[in-house]
Amino acid sequence: MRILIAPDKFKGTLTGAEAAEAMAAGVRRVLPDAHLTLQPIADGGEGTLEAVLAAGGDRRQTRVRGPLTDWVDAPWALTGFTAVIETARASGLEFITPSGATAGSAHCYGSGELLAAALDAGATEIVLGVGGSAMTDGGSGALRALGAKILDDDGGELPLGGLALARAAALDLSGLDPRLHRVRLRIAVDVQNPLFGPDGAAHVFGGQKGADAGLRTELDAALTRWAQLLENTTGVDVQQPGAGAAGGFPAAFLACTKASLEPGFELVAGLTGLDGKLAHADVVLTGEGSLDAQSQFGKAPLGLADRARDLGLPVLAVAGRITLSDADLAAHGVVQARSLADAAPSIAAAMDGAAGYAADASEAVLRALLSNS
Image 1 (cartoon, helix red, strand yellow):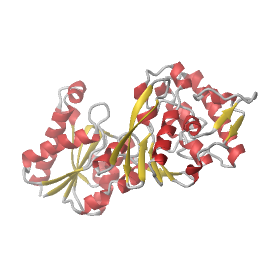
Image 2 (cartoon, one colour; image 1 turned 45 degrees about the horizontal axis):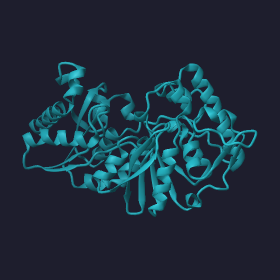
Image 3 (tube, rainbow, N blue to C red; image 1 turned 30 degrees about the horizontal axis):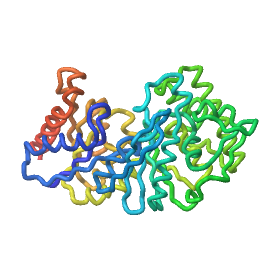
Image 4 (cartoon, rainbow, N blue to C red; image 1 turned 90 degrees about the vertical axis):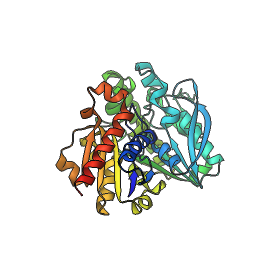
């Protein structure tokens, strides 16, 4: 039997690669001679880089500015002439302790430095996975790392960070790296939030970055001003669905380059050759931290399940917790599913022993499939 084992991350417990290894261990208890293909998947956010590296991408690393003042060693990937960058690896929440101060001053300058490194490496296409970001700066930090200047009323350069955009008066693009106009820039998004407004970057995502209600309002006003400045300078209206992802990161590049926003799972699936791996599978085993209502809106495991279902392949699912009904899962072709939370004595135990419980759950769903065959 040929089994494709393709989970997303179990957030806070297992990376996609670790989850795949744990699930493979459970499968081997049942079918030790099965042909297993392990391929982590992602929806364009965190885990995208790992999925591409697992598919054979060349790992690179560049020292860049983190979201505040520290430097970080940020990995990225090059596969052929396509570079794959996760903004979280340079400008992620993991590098800060969220507070009001960090929410206003965090920036994505380091993500721009990764873009420059990719251009230096000869990339003609750059895929940006966004998510898990610390900043709410509308992509302004990255744009500045690539040569743009943002000026106040007196012609002075603004400090980095989203809050400073409230004083943005002019955008000078004369020094912007000209290579940006020749590269294909594809931004993977899995949300439809606009840049500003009640459903925008500041109000929806600012809280997890340390912003209270008052600061979220200030940041939203700053992003509104930034959007107007971008439109006045480039003629592009950046108040688009998806522009609010990663603190509004896409906005700067929608205005100043030929960047496109693309559904994250579809983009990553193409990069990793997922359709080819499905074509050589008899069964698909997937999973993630939580299979819930959000999983049905562009998330990777059910996106994969839909692809497998259309090929007539049975899908097995393992997740930290499952709140979808059997009927919901069946609609995506999932024939057996188990949660770690149901097997463990507590949620804490499930998280502490996630690899072991994932192996057990994988063994259980495979045995259930075989017994019903």
